Amino acid sequence: MNTGVHSFWSHFKSSILQKRGNEGFLRPWLDAVISAEIEKQDEQYYCKLQTPSELHKKYIQDNILQDLLDYLAQSLNKPCQVQFEVIPQLPSKIESSIEKPLTKQVSKPSPFNSEYVFENFIVGSGNEFAHGASIATVNNTKEFNPLFIYGPSGLGKTHLLNAIGQKALEINKRSKIIYISAERFLNECVLAIQKREMLQFRKKYRGQCDFLLVDDIQMIAKGEKVQEEFFHTFNDLYNNGSKIVLCCDKSPSSIPGLANRMRTRFEGGLIVDISYPDLETRLAIIKHKADRKKLFLSKETLLKIAQTCQNSVREIEGVLNKIKMMSDLCRGGLSSPQIKSILKDVCPRELKVEDVQKKVAEKFQLSLEEMKSPTRKKHIVTARQTAMYLIKKHFKKSLNDIGILFNKKDHTTVLNSIKKVEKLLVEDPGFKALFEDLNRDIHKYKLKD
Ligand code: ADP
Ligand code: MG
Image 1 (spheres, helix red, strand yellow):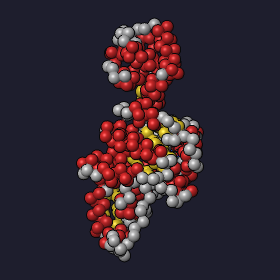
Image 2 (cartoon, helix red, strand yellow):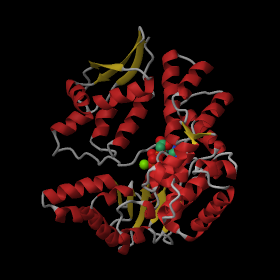
Image 3 (tube, helix red, strand yellow):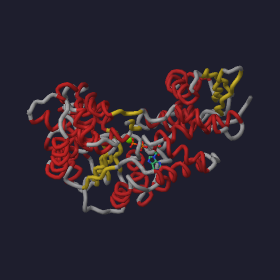
Image 4 (spheres, protein in one colour):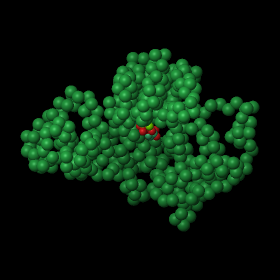
């Protein structure tokens, strides 16, 4: 069954570009593919790619094929074979630019994902402050600099960073923007050290720029030298009036290995967190994404997806892509058992009380036995109290029941522990950050009493 050009190709393109840091040279090869289709024959899936030349075919085989196979296997829940067909075309843009690199000026590809704009960002619970602060930054507010956005993976940090960059260019196309992942900064820095090209490296990042946008800044803490380089880059640009936006998977005080002077810089502006969207926001996101994919889903299906996918917006996208791919293959809407089977794969894992205890112990770098032991050592007592608090917060358990879980402590000990944690949350920012990490992590699961 031939099913026409699939929307999966554009999603695959954005996912590989994002994975590889929006590598500009990859995009033209992906764009040049003439058609990409998926067919199913005798229970076997085939992905048929038409390329305009042998060179394209070879480039894709050497550089992209493995990612494509992984993507297809994950999306279809089955291995898929990739077949190529070369359909010779007039010399393509890529080849002419390869053949005549000096005579033809090739415009620099945008580092941004064109889908990640403010117009495609649904604002709701969990992200409204991050969104508001991003808009304010791009609209020239200098009250808070840097803007530090943090939160778990898949909730829209990279999207907002791209939206800021693209909006800034829309307002002034001459804006100079440095948009980079901290991992890339780290890799380039290591390479520059090896090749003794630090001067060029510094020149590249410390020049004049309007915006410095850095994604996954937690990676900067991976090496001392790179932190030092970033510290000077940050200071130079900050002092020159650049606006700085940093995205991170944790708050500045929870980044392991981050130097103090770096942390205070990060904390010197505005810190906003992104947290999990509530059901209404998830529904709005699903509707928006389904519309863009021209995927028509019943109210019940939309609600079912929103109720099931609670872990991240990325997960929601994964489900919609699967539904789109499957309904294209079936040439029509999916039945509710088919939708159910797709959603079965993404159901959040269940978390039991003991798993929460283990998570807390792990976070405090203790064994479960140590944490439950009757010791009065401060660090262990805090871990125990935190676990009691989290269990009270997330499970329907009485104080007595919780006491039993901790070597038969009585209910007043549990009550005092809860009060102690409440006090720490107000008085100790370090503890608060650690607690929030744990709380966020637990939130990802379906809890089982
Ligand atoms: P993060 O950087 O926080 O890990 P991303 O920005 O990569 O997450 O987002 C993952 C996916 O979810 C992206 O495709 C993004 O467009 C989408 N997404 C996240 N939040 C929203 C939102 N509020 N509205 C629309 N799409 C969103
Ligand atoms: Mg990201």
